[in-house]
Length: 66
Image (cartoon, rainbow, N blue to C red):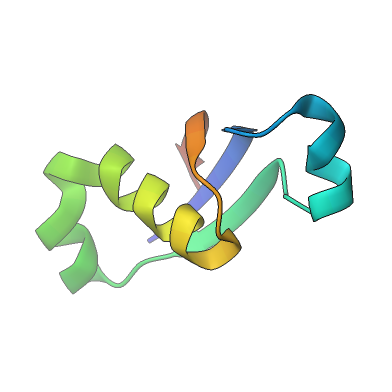
């Protein structure tokens, strides 16, 4: 399954987002097995994934299935 994650709100100052190169949108592909395991905790999974990938915490995001 593919998800478009957008309106990513990082827990950094607005002026730091561009300097740090933090994205405001990403596309994430998940296998069916992963989806079955995390669908109840999708928001937490994506927040952890993005934090692990970019090294910063986030305050929220929106998403849609592609």
